[in-house]
Image (cartoon, rainbow, N blue to C red; front, top):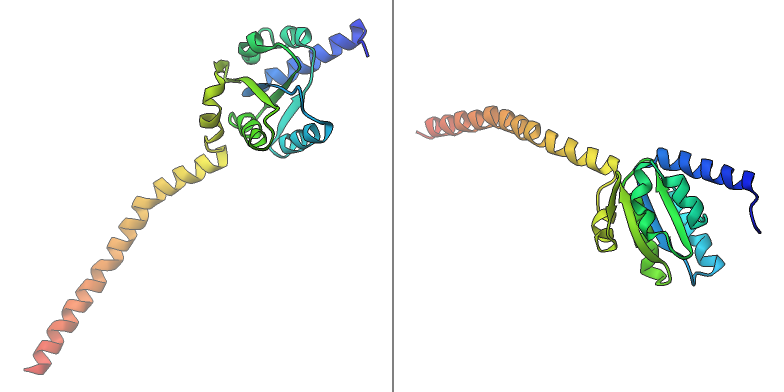
Length: 175
């Protein structure tokens, strides 16, 4: 069904507002996917806080202009789905990467992370980046390790002194 001018303006405005707040964008060609597979892709994207949109390429180019997501406009050809992430830069890549494992019909054309276009061959590297929570927990673990070792060292001093005194005491009692 064709959109009238006002409907097209509304779509462009909606996509532009999403793109303005996004840290990453993914473009994938969905030709050949069944409705069931597309529904599965949408539900996995929803779980990962990724919003998927199927928009005409011309409207997408207009909406993405002057945003950090503009870097993906050269790959906007064919029947594509746009995936936007507002929180985690790697979540779009993770959703696409996980979906591709079971469905070879989804062809990722490119990613945009923080205004930089990323080739498809880097998809797995970006998908393997830790999430924000994982990165924070790794940093906290690294910060906690020296403190734990210091605490163990401090605990070990009186223990060793006690062992030495006990050994000396046993030696004197045996004489």
